[in-house]
Image 1 (cartoon, rainbow, N blue to C red):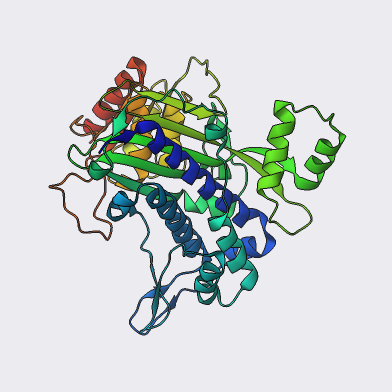
Image 2 (image 1 turned 60 degrees about the vertical axis):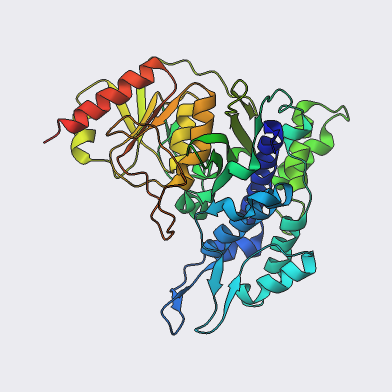
Length: 413
């Protein structure tokens, strides 16, 4: 039975915002941040399985919170919500824990405690965030009301990347920029990626890219003073600061950096027009340069050849951020000659590209990227690489640029 596409996009946005708030809290709570940035030697069970550190545990936990949010709304999709991370966490040679959001906050806290070496504060914070109801700004503002069309939950599956660009997440910082593109490690590169696709065609039907660390608003103490000195009128700026401070109300230390996020969504129904949107709104980009984004591990010979042209071929972190830079127009194209991205990296952004009239293609063949088709291999363990490279664009200029890059790469000795 078909359901409104608007309901699918709403739950994707809502779930991504809950994940974003967990991601921000892990960087603003003193105890969670200490766990996140702690360098620990990997521990193994007697069977050789790695006991995950908090960085990995946070990644898995955010994924499982997303799974819980999606399957609560669409229980018939429970067996078809796939993530980058494995949910089984080894504790010893004979014991492991399936990480999941349980029926009550207390039950979830008890599940998390042994995984956190008995750290009650950390377990309670993570459980509380998972069980806390939130209202996503997009849903609250009615920005999704214009989404038309339907989808069938029985033929829909989902790919999740809970924290894309984990290195930038743990290192922190605001990053370095070139021509409006983040070219160094920094929190703005971190994204939560969720994509829904049709299992019969393998093509995306809806997607969300949530950027938890979109804008650094300032230090908490300073912002609290600013809000207190503002007139009581409910202005957009006051609402923005109040919301950012309120969502971090679980944090129990003196001062921290307060970030606001943004969420970009797209819907590609088969029976209605495509739509997409963003909150906050995308800023229109005006520039003359020709800009493409790439991996820092891109072919050195291709990079060297581009340096002899007028193409700015900029390395930036995170597959999600690279595709986001194309979606928002700060880059004309994304080009990747290798196989270093996976289905969970691209499904969400791909749906938004399609909604914008753009494409995500295999660079070698210019065939569209497809996801979990019914005749595709179903073994996990990292078998879902996007083989054959990638190229993404939304404009004719981007298409011509991507093809130029492919020609340069193919003619490289």
